[in-house]
Amino acid sequence: MFFKKKQEKQNQEVVVELSNDFKSALRHFAYYYTNGTLPFVIGDESILKNVDYREILKEEASLVEQAYAIFANVIKMDSSGKVLNQTQAMKRAAQWIRHVCTHRIDNYMIEPEFEDWEVHLH
Image (cartoon, rainbow, N blue to C red):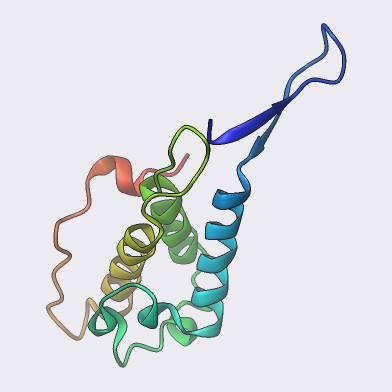
């Protein structure tokens, strides 16, 4: 499972935790986003080349929220909680970031286009 179940006593509510691998993937995404190194870990530096996304998005919390939602929606784990596609999840979030930061100044096309499930806010 992608999470651990803990049950202290019989007939008590089951507490669910995310896997350590997922927690690590989320922490790394936050780190790379925040310190500006996301372009270097997604396998395609050109997506965010010369885009000062941290400066552009610092006043746009809902756009950052959407980037995190895309990351969380795209990431996949096996039954033990091991993350299978961390780079792909970060890349899809980076494509969103590029789009919202540069849509007025360039004709960047997201390939493939986002599907509804990728951008859904839960």
